[in-house]
Image (cartoon, rainbow, N blue to C red; front, side, top):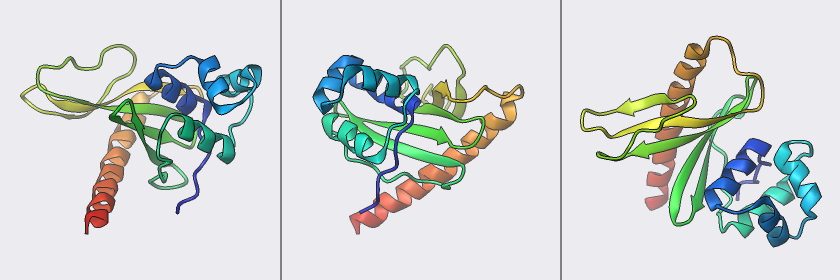
Length: 169
């Protein structure tokens, strides 16, 4: 079994938002003092492996192995409310967490904030990197980082598909 890596404050905020829980509700669920947990959510206190596991258990998530190059990119997978969510994490400055969103034909494309097109088809479907939560100050030239993010997502998703296919064997 792969040892779980601690999540970051932006990842925790994304999980709380996706689960549609209040910070206090989740703190109570995992048995942590609400103020202490609030400091973790704010990024003022670190979130260790044990706490990450408790959070995942409370949210009904299977603690995923973190994929990708351990020094730069990871792809996080969560099962929330019956749906799968993917998060792309950039682990070196400028660090960020972003959600990977699939859009079906007829659905609205993500709007607001920074949206990077990973793939877009003529029928309106596509995959987008959006919901950026910056840990560090965003770079002045975002285009290079956007290009790197799409390349990393391509490589990570290919590796994920191969891993899932090998599990089916």
